[in-house]
Image 1: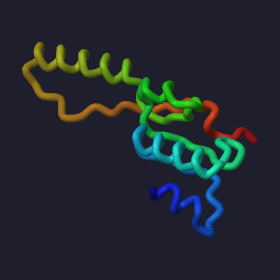
Image 2 (image 1 turned 90 degrees about the horizontal axis):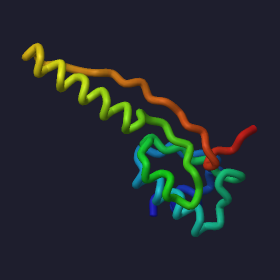
Image 3 (image 1 turned 180 degrees about the vertical axis):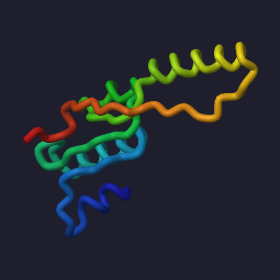
Image 4 (image 1 turned 45 degrees about the horizontal axis):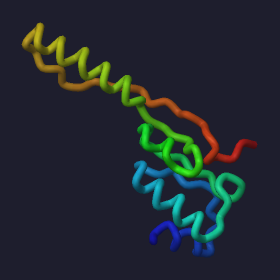
Length: 106
């Protein structure tokens, strides 16, 4: 509903960056229901690089850390904590962008 309200406002929205797969699904649905062409009229980027993104009618441009990399890092640090008996306070994983059909290429 919020996406429909945004798209129906006086502002010309040409791109949306969404914070999750679920939000992106709603944004894509609103665009489809309003007849907005993705990516010709609206580019969508989702910050949630999860496998479910492949199930949508359009392949999403996503930003995030691949789940396989997250799983590998978790396993590595759990084993390290078992060995050293020391907690690991934080781990930084750099996200990557995967450009697909939901963003307009200039």
